[in-house]
Length: 123
Image (tube, rainbow, N blue to C red; front, side):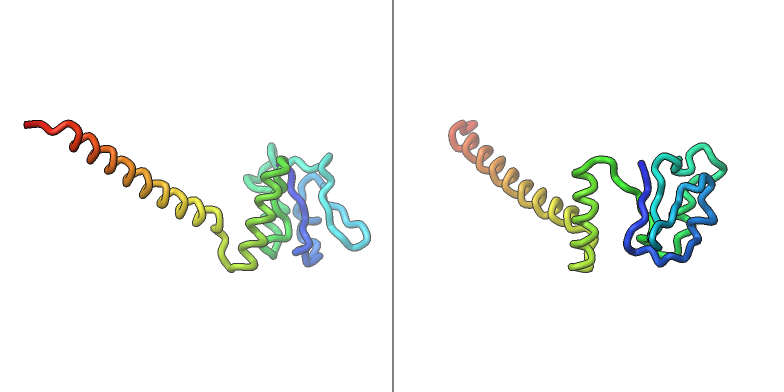
């Protein structure tokens, strides 16, 4: 998976000095990563990409999803997180949905058991 430099970059140039493949370039004052040179630091002495490790901001250099929808949801979750100060919107949605579904399923099962009990009394 490739990495990208975001608008959160403060142009401190740390990434330029730590990149082992010199994949980080500067054009018109904007930093960017040349994907043909970037190896994500795989096969090097580093266990994490050095652009990420050396970045003083949290979001200056991030993993760029290769799948369109993965990228869309990553961006969506980041924006919703900033707007609501909550990063786990979809987790909360899933928990609420699964809880409601579980309640409906339990109620349905209880009704089915009651129907069976009424229709087949054991004496």
